[in-house]
Each structure stands twice: as C-alpha cells, then as structure tokens.
Image (cartoon, rainbow, N blue to C red; front, side):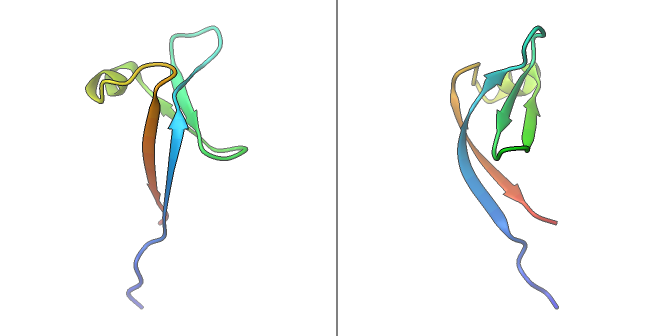
Length: 58
C-alpha cells in the first residue's frame, strides 16, 4: 500500500515560554512545537507573529 501521508495545515501565533527566552506554537490543546531563537531569526519571525505550520503524519 502506497498511500500519501496525511498533512495538517494551520496558522499559529508564536508565544513566549514563561520565565525563559524561548518560544513555541500551539496547534491543539496538548500539542506544541518549540521554536529556537536561531529558527525564528532564519524565518524572520518573532514573538506574537503568525506562522503557517504544516505537520506531516508518519
């Protein structure tokens, strides 16, 4: 069986991790993706900015 993987697209706001200089995006009630400073710099996004996220299921 050679099926195409399921993808999930969404827009999320970059949020600050309390008490440390890190950030994350939340894409459901209990799912988060961390965004290191170097990645934020590379995509030229900062805290409070919206980002388009695509997650591919394995």
